[in-house]
Amino acid sequence: RGTIALVGRPNVGKSTIFNRLIGQRKSIVEDTPGVTRDRIYGILDWLTLQYRLIDTGGIQIEDQPFSEEINMQVEIAIEEANVIVMIVSAKEGITSDDVAIARKLKKSNKPIILAVNKADNESLRMNIYEFYELGLGDPIPISGAHGLGLGDLMDIAVKDMPDQKIPDYEGITSFCVIGRPNVGKSSLVNAILKEDRVIVSDVQGTTRDAIDTPFKFNDKEYMIIDTAGIRKRGKIYENIEKYSILRAQSAIERANVVLVLIDGELGIREQDKHVAGLAHEAGKGVIIVYNKWDTVEKDDKTMNKITKEIRAHFKYLDYAPIAFVSAKTRSKVNQLIPLIDTVHDYCTMRIATNVLNDVILDAQMMNPPKPHNGRQLKILYSSQVAVEPPTFVLFVNDPELFHFSYKRYLENKLREAFGFVGTPLHIMVRKK
Ligand code: GDP
Image 1 (tube, protein in one colour):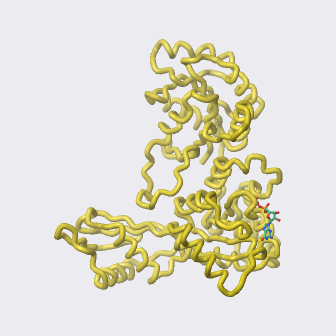
Image 2: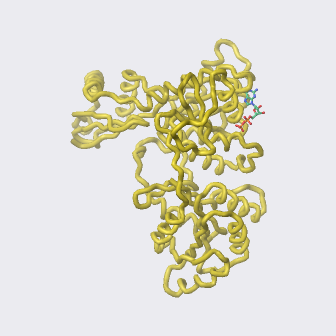
Image 3: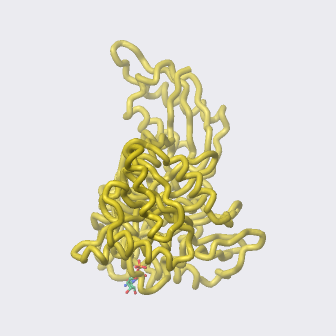
């Protein structure tokens, strides 16, 4: 899976094109409560493959001159993407900003495709020729508004995509550490890698992505995703929330388990919710890590009090265990890896169909669904259809009768019966 970035000056139509390409992706998580919908990063299905698409226009810095902003967007595109699509406008023609962006892009060694947007009709399409002047090769006419030429554009983007060494972490538990700036992500990664039994090693037989760090603990292999991004000092753009969210999203995608860090010194902040929402939405295993525990003045009630606070702020993450650690003193850091193992085991757990049906049947008998307009929901048969996250399909007499609160009830029953610590559960209904 490769990454394509859209760059260009404002108003050339980047987000229209972005939305066209991403479309209304129907995902299996359709029935989880929406948390944050980020608009600059999406997954694009093309032919049989999936690509990441970034609209760099959505990444903005406040109180900076416009030229700074454009520079940053171009730099981020060069850093994050395998293929860059520069967008210009057939209606407005070449502008000095276009020239500046093209010049900057040409200094990178990434494949660059020049797309001329707003080529809505034959006469506008004639305007593409002036863009040869940018020195980026053949301009491709497209129209985001009318959905024209996007297929051709994608074909070229995919053809230009360098061969990806797809990291294969099969059989290895991978995890990432996310959180807003200064929560202690790099400190925690370093603390984990300094644990007594950790051996940092190249994992044999895998193609290893340069930014991920493999290590062994108690003879088991693990992978910390995007360690480079975390450990790199002078993280220039990290303070731009959208950019750090984009980085987090791509790390979460590749991880089995996500550690959501909270700064215990400052307490829970609004931005923590965005970050935690990403982990939940991705359907990955989640552990909430309350860091800087050393700075918290505590008595025997503190942990309970903070646990309640966390539960109240992150209601949708009620399945995530909470760990209280200090990356600085390394207190409790050694308990994280066993916890990651536990969570990953639950993420991949398969329940035998007969056992599952017994639990669902019991749950129905103990607390039958309330009739709705005189009709009652009947769950006739259930089956687990996927892992990571465990996904269940319930075959029912009428899906319309399946109330949200009953789903919640069944989820709790499944957790009571099987644990499922740290993993979201997806429950879907189908008409039998
Ligand atoms: P990042 O931006 O999330 O990677 O955060 P850093 O790892 O760079 O840490 C930010 C600051 O918090 C640094 O000054 C760290 O020394 C400090 N810090 C990190 N973890 C802890 C901790 O557990 N306790 C205390 N007291 N300080 C910490």
